[in-house]
Length: 128
Image 1 (tube, rainbow, N blue to C red):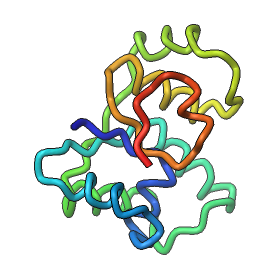
Image 2 (image 1 turned 180 degrees about the vertical axis):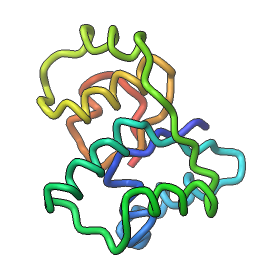
Image 3 (image 1 turned 45 degrees about the vertical axis):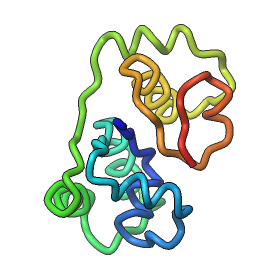
Image 4 (image 1 turned 90 degrees about the horizontal axis):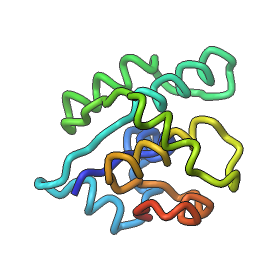
């Protein structure tokens, strides 16, 4: 499975894995699954940390690099097909970061790992 980690999922996986449901932890730890992190999530974390609304015990860079090294998390970029997919999304969710993650998951047929129940309304594969 190709798992696109929502921003909160990566943060919890890094800091408080016990907050993740067992099936999410099992999927993240399964050797055959690819762990993906959108550059949009990195951007979101950087903005929130700079504004003081996200408290991490280290920099966003250190967090991401640690996850890349320890758990093989791959940072994936955004492309025009992801942006075009936004036009297909009803406005159930107004958060631009969540919307681009949904578009990316749908366009690339990824499983989005998110506790946000609204995500399921979009027809994307969501694990939680």
